[in-house]
Amino acid sequence: MKNIFLTLLFLGFCIFATAQSQPNVGDELVIKEPVAQNYRYVKFPRLNILAKKGKVANYKSVYGNTVIVKEVMTKEDGSTFVLLQKKDGSKFFGYLKNVKANYNKSIEAGELNPSK
Image (cartoon, rainbow, N blue to C red; front, side, top):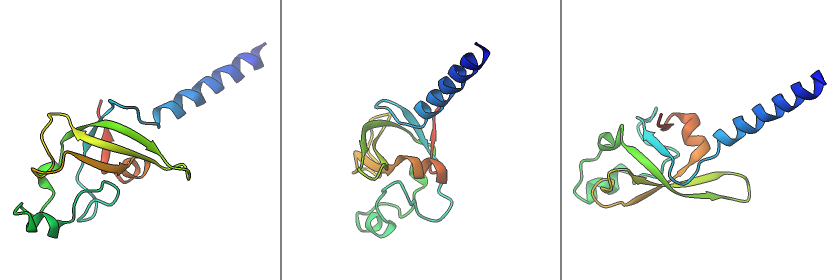
C-alpha cells in the first residue's frame, strides 16, 4: 500500500512539473535583457531595420515589458513557439503588434521570464 501511494505521489509530481513547462494562451511573460547584443530566440527585428524605420537602434525600449501569449504553436520536432503581444496593447518599436519566440529556448536563455 505504501509503494502504491509513493508511486502515485511521484507520478502526480511529474505531471505537475511537465504542465508548468508548457505555455498556455493568456500566460504573462516578462522580456529581459539579452545576454548578447541581440535577442536570439525572440524574433525582434535587427537593429539596422529599426534604424531604417527611423527608430532608435537598440532594444532598451522592450526591457521589462510584460507580454501575453496570444497563440501557442508546436512543430513536428517538438519545439514550441509562442506569439507574444504587449500587455498594454501598444506596439513593439511603434510598428510591430506581435512577435514570435521559441518558448523553451528563450526561457532557458533568460530572454523571457514567467511573470509571477
